[in-house]
Length: 74
Image 1: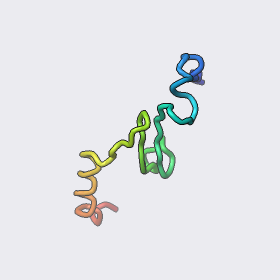
Image 2: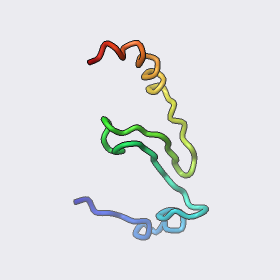
Image 3: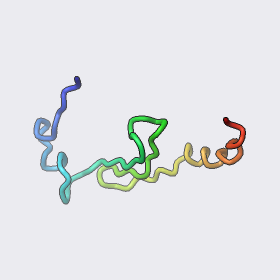
């Protein structure tokens, strides 16, 4: 079992550790199990409260070739 280290232990509870106004937050929104790459579909991500654009190179390539090869994989 991995030991859990909380914000209080690290003495950063004034900035992180709970969902409150003016605290930094890293949040991942997914459909399916976020830790299972077969079932997870990440819908959004926020790092330090900033919305992260998930439409990167890998997503663009996936969309580009998805329709081309969709009927060939069975």
